Image (cartoon, rainbow, N blue to C red; front, side, top):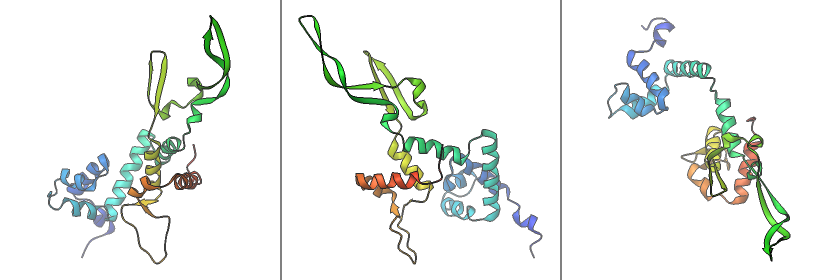
Length: 203
């Protein structure tokens, strides 16, 4: 007969190593291999380990400790993804039509209405949303982080996308495969952004 609950919950040395390795990349198969399990059975062993309450508890405890040490929490990560996913070019640029110099005639500046773009000062923008920035020949160029990827990551975290269509007693039209995201129309993408914006993710 198995002893008390404390003995049941105790991890083997190999399971402890699995937990440590799993925290590196959250890949159960690779964690099992690095922990010393056979490569042939690593996939099934890794998946099985993640279903065991004692291992789940140890992983959660380790993640909580790491979050406390680094001050990196799920909410903080989600907030950063939300900022990228819902970023707007008007957060960085202002554009419109105004009177400006459009050329010169006989040494005199010609003033007329023209389309103009102004970059906002660095104090007015969130630099965390910019992945690249450069200044060449007087022209400022910048590139934002991938908005679609951020929306995909948010969607996956919120359970909006699955690798396989899930079947249950009720039909859920909101479940789509991840690969379907690239096939969505502009209207559907706008609907997705509206749905995500109504979640509890806030800055």
